[in-house]
Length: 154
Image 1 (cartoon, rainbow, N blue to C red):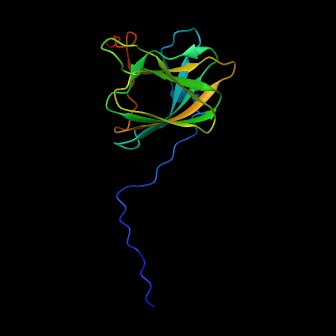
Image 2 (cartoon, one colour):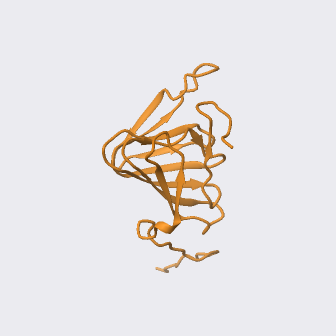
């Protein structure tokens, strides 16, 4: 019996990044409806031209602005805390907006399609931590809107 070893082509190198928890200098802030903001910490950003990863930390009783991620599809993995993704069912010409709520607990996954308006919400009393992976592009795109169905904030 002849054994064949597969030939694997490699076109890049393996990259790693310091844990965003231990390196707060790479923290970015996004808008919120309350005084407590959600922070997004870069984990794997600008290391690939086609995918990126961040860590989102939402403080208790906070929410992001209504936003979308342009051409990027987004995968969310809930690490800790109990948070929600709010989006629109798209029923009717003018809404209703923000009428779909998907609660995420630790271990849950979610997919946010490109250009889908949504909002991250933490109504609880503990911090929410999510791992966020977006593609395409190596840098996260966040387009904050002036409310549901609104124009881009400037």
